[in-house]
Length: 281
Image (cartoon, rainbow, N blue to C red; front, side, top):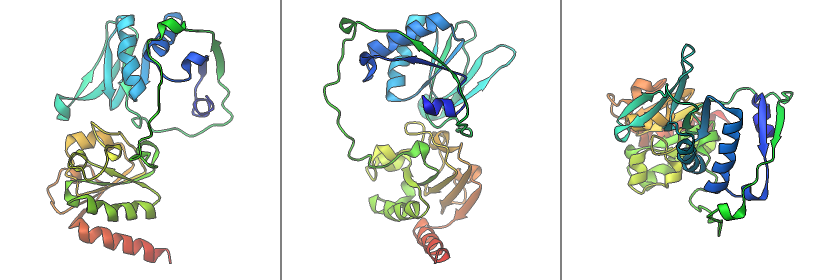
C-alpha cells in the first residue's frame, strides 16, 4: 500500500482478511467482483503475473466483458474512452492491437515492466477506503499445501533490474554465459537470455526475456549474440539504452539498438570487462 501511495495513487481500496493471506481463485475473484460491481470502473488493468492470469479470465466471464491477455503496450483513445491493448499473436510473430468498444469494464492483463515507474513522492496522501468483504470458507475450493522455492531463480529479478546483460544463441553454450555474468556483476546488473538459449537448456527459464518470458525496461540492456526476433524485441524494446553485440551486421537487433558492435562476442565481452576493470583502478 505504501508503494502504491508513493507512486501516485489517488485512492487505495483495502480488502483484508485471513482468506486473502494466500492467493486463491475463488476468494480473490469474488472480492474483486464485489468491488467492480460497487465502483463501476470503465477499465481494469491486472498484472500479467501467475495470479493475474488466473483471476482475469474468471472475472471477465462473470462481468460478461472482454479480456485482452498478456499485453505488452497500452494506449488510450480520448474521444471514445477505449483502451488500445497491444499483445503478441500468431506465436509472437505479429503484434495485434485490440479494443473493446461495446462492453465495460474493458479488462487487460498487462505484463510487469511495461510501464516505467514514475518519480516517488513520499508526501502523496491518497484516500484510503476499507471494504469489509469476506468469503465463506466453503466457497474456497483450493488451499495452499506447500510452497516450493525455485532454486534456479536465485536473486534474479529482471523486471526491476537497471542493467541486464542478455545472451542468445550466439553465446554458443552454457559456458558462454559465464563472461556475461561477470560483466553483469561489474555493472550491478543481472543476466537475461533469449528463448533460443533457454530452450537449448543453457540457462534457466527465469532469465528469459521476450514474449514468452519477462518484459523489461532497464536503463541499460546489452544484447549479446541475440538476433533480435520480434518475440525477443517485444520484451526489451522499452529499455532506455540498448547495446547490441553481434557478428552479423544484418541482424535485426541493430535496427533497435542505440549502440551496435559488429564482432565476435567472445572477443568483445572480455575486452569490455578488461576496460571496465582498468577504468576503476
